[in-house]
Image 1 (cartoon, one colour):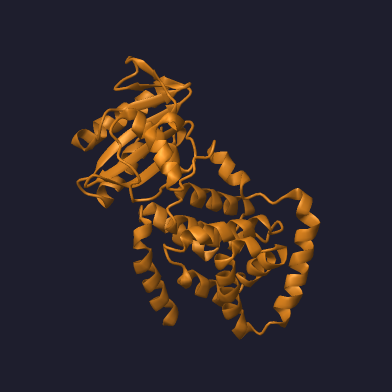
Image 2 (spheres, one colour):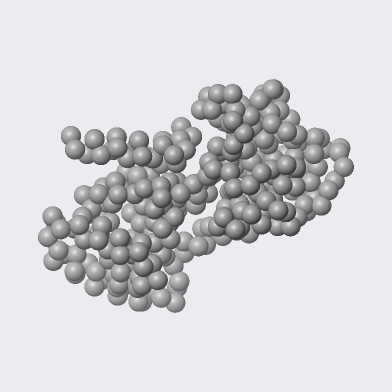
Length: 319
């Protein structure tokens, strides 16, 4: 599931407006997906995407809806299906409609093969051109990306094969430097390097990126870094830690991926967060932050809760 920002960037007045904003809320153009937009007090508080096949089995869809309504009592859900086969998508959409009852917002919408229908599978078809809408233009002005597909997010975390030797060299030099750095100085060094990177991201070279990737392997340094994260700084963190992940050798991405996943969640980039967790699954490692983020996803906790969670984490670490 993907979740994203809770602050609206434009007004949705029609189905084309809705379809124009969805890719920007998710961060990519969905395929074979059911998108559920949770609206509370006239504002979007959650945009969730799940694969059609993932909610096909009995009760999976209904349980997801119940979790959303439990989290936001009185909210309304707007549903959009994206598919290659309309029959399967409409089956799920009508299942959701029956379960939602009065909690359904607007008409059901299904996008298929460059066109969309509203209401049911036998309605009129309309051209689907989300990029031509006012909502898409306004979202772009607000800095919300709409990548071609979800796979583009994963490709954006891949290292450049042409820099493999340089990356290995930077990390070897970094390990030598790390071994000579007293343990009680590692946290301060990580915070200092991170602050410099956030202030001047264009000045980060492979040596700096490797140094960040190595420093964050120290548990105390990592915890101090986590506690320094704020929602306001989260976008900057995403930019920095994405570069660290891309500049890490295979096996060295674990902690940078975990930091990037947390930053992505705090920034409202739920799709990127999910991709980071999937990359950790591929590596076969689940660091402590993975479990925290998994719990946040299961509880559908919005990024606005981060200040409270951070204070609680700080209290636990002080005990």
